[in-house]
Length: 112
Length: 110
Image (cartoon, rainbow over all chains, first blue to last red; front, side, top):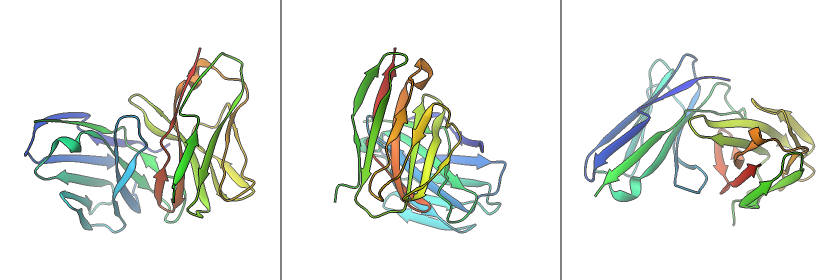
């Protein structure tokens, strides 16, 4: 399968700080998605990106589809304790196809 | 609107036993998938379906069977469980490419 490299693997931050994480691939993707997973739950879709260069926000979250189409970034501003969880990037090579390739996740811990 | 439901939530099997993990969705999505999640490996696709009667293999299909007789249901069968199948299993329903996940089944094979 496709290799998506997600970094960092884990982060410990103070409440109120901003967070940045990214995902890179050796392949070109047509779609990038960002998910959050809480303990004991399934991943929940946060943001979907469909075009190179696209910048999309969802509340305090902002994600960008890299110009090269081989990377994507997720930023969280003014972190709060409920931001704790694992964040996954996912990419799709063929538009409309069912398959997604997932990164290995970034585990975020927010210290109150 | 329950979204994607999975049963059971937890299961312990002995090596060689068989079982079926159930998945149902009420969003009328044509696409459904099964993933397994292992520590440090992210989510890996086991099997998927693009509609009733149509299934295909994903990245890690060995040891698993699926069928899709209705739009709503997509069960995953383990015919002879092995310790390597200890994992958390997620079913997803999608309006491509956006996938919506169930709460997962945590399976332990001893």
